[in-house]
Structures are given as C-alpha cells and as structure tokens.
Image (cartoon, rainbow, N blue to C red; front, side, top):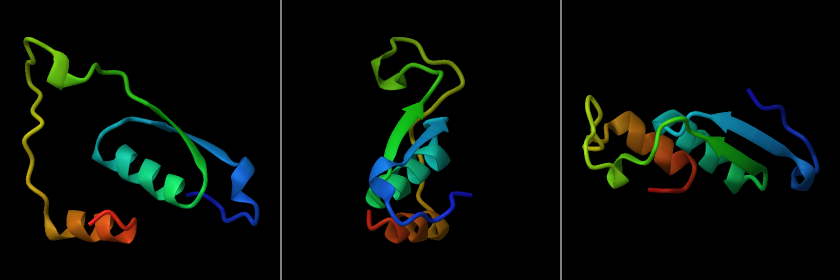
Length: 74
C-alpha cells in the first residue's frame, strides 16, 4: 500500500507484473502524478507467432469496471 505524500512529483514506484492488477496499479499511480516503472517478464503475446497457455481474450466484470472507474478509465 502506497503512503500519501504532499509532493508526488518526485515519487517513483516500480510495479512488477503487467497483468490486470499491475496495469491498474500503474494507472492509479500515474493519475496521481507518481512516476511509474512497469516491469513484465513475458513478451507481448500479440507479437508472438505461437502462444501456449495464454490468452488475451477476457470479460470485464462489474468489479473490473468499478476499478477502471476508480482510476477514471471507464
């Protein structure tokens, strides 16, 4: 959990994992003026010829929509 600071312009946060949760956290921090470094181990599956066991098809639940609305990305 991030702690609130008065001067966010000098704050930087590193997020490990570019999945749904990591991306949402990155949006939240960026919208609050905090510099974000987002790290993901896997390559972008949209650029891969063969992808085993991974899919980018997803449904967005009410809870997911609420989370996006919280960071003003609805």
